[in-house]
Image (cartoon, rainbow, N blue to C red; front, side):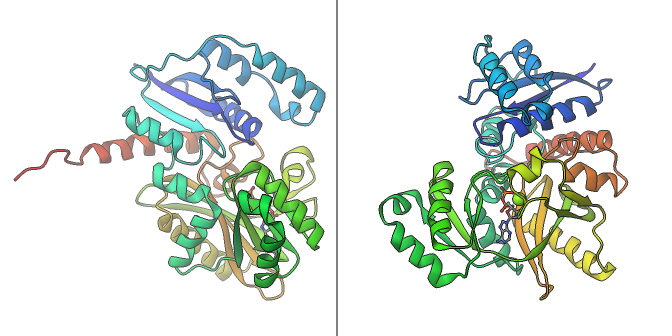
Length: 363
Ligand SMILES: Nc1ncnc2c1ncn2[C@@H]1O[C@H](COP(=O)(O)OP(=O)(O)O)[C@@H](O)[C@H]1O
Ligand SMILES: [Mg+2]
């Protein structure tokens, strides 16, 4: 008997399209001899669509669409007219693979729903998802584990709207230009900007506050960008280190998904000792954030000083054909289909482990 694997994708997030691209890659790699694939597309408005409607989205080449604004606008109009709702029945679903990035997907919300529905799901649980989604909270956990994080300031939308000058002062007192301004809970560089001047800082704060009520302002570094992929629940498999050299001034949305000129080096050219240190720190960060299943751990290696900082953990890393997470495992000897199968196994293992918990008190 084949098991049913529900693939959740789309979602109420700035990374909606990236999720569709990731989901398409995952769908192609799922072992169809073991699993029946049930695609569930979540619209930008948060509606869950039927299998047929979801399949029509999954079949589209969003990798090409994100590079073509007119075609993307046309596709959005098509999607807005799709009818047919997912019947909220999890009884025929054996396992869920949430391939959702950003808010309402990578942040613990959907994980909480799946816990309540008592269905196994791939990847991080509620706590690790929520913690790693919030860049400020994650930094606190990393610091506690003894890892270096860049200096930063937190500001809220209300302050940015009503007392921008005070926020700017707070940033300038604590940090030097250039600074990076980012929404605390997002990804794919959506709403992230580099500020070299006060005017750019003001614009960046307003931009980030459009995406999140909580905004992070960080000390900008001149750094190499290194990443490590981690897989496992209790025992961890840690990939080789990868490096990204963005084609733009920083690794913004365009450099990630629109242009194809950013360079990826796997493994990163690093002395062996240094890459071992980075891999060890990736495992420490994974545990410190309470991660399970998978995570991509991103670092900055400051040029000159050669100092290592942890930047962030991605609880649901990109799974597109060009994404680092699967590529780094490929370079470590785990193929894309093997990786997907292993992630599903880990979901069942965690579910079984949780079921062992006693739920009644014995005196
Ligand atoms: N403190 C920083 N110093 C230098 N570059 C940064 C800094 N913070 C972010 N960046 C640049 O912005 C990109 C996106 O920031 P990041 O914090 O990784 O957000 P996201 O979750 O959107 O990927 C990074 O990959 C890097 O190129
Ligand atoms: Mg990042």
